[in-house]
Length: 126
Image 1: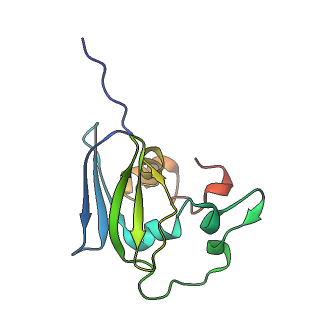
Image 2: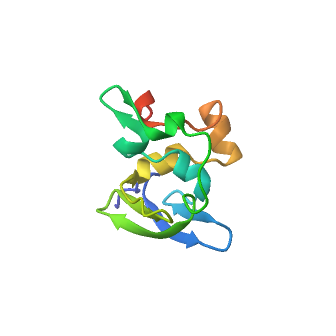
Image 3: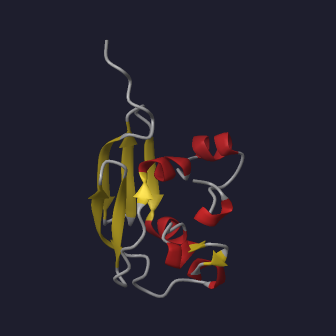
């Protein structure tokens, strides 16, 4: 008897450059389509999201400059996440698979959370 993998284990990840999104299929067959700008606003690195009670750059940023929301590449980080390489060279944010599943923007996931996905790590989401 084999154990069923948890829903936060991806079985397929695609960088869809044409539609500017990251596609993830999960072990439970759920599919997440994550827009690049949506992901950049949720960058979990300390510089963007803050740490130690200090706000990150995203708290005071009204909008991104051109290029900041272009995902040039994405790299696997261990067995637990991915690290995007953004058009402005930023590549500090490790998006854990647990986090990506938690911020899935599909209607069913948003409804299950009771609203839109949180924007920052320092608000106790993950």
